[in-house]
Length: 85
Image (cartoon, rainbow, N blue to C red; front, side, top):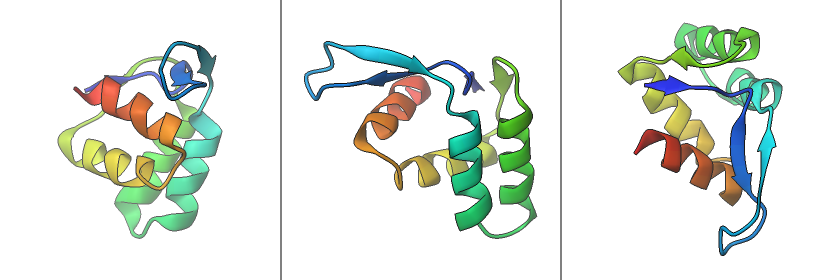
């Protein structure tokens, strides 16, 4: 799965009519780094933080991304759901 955390489309309203493009690399990497456990979370946090555009994430990384996105704002949850469909 390819994801560009530097350009995440976040809706600013529940109707999904307005959005902003946001660089979520540092914020999301920090969430995984501070709330995750184990080397896989550390490696993924560093990978996201250091990314510069679209990168491939394997199935295990996608599971971690989805799990931690669900601890974020509803707009971020919706953004990750849309990317992973």
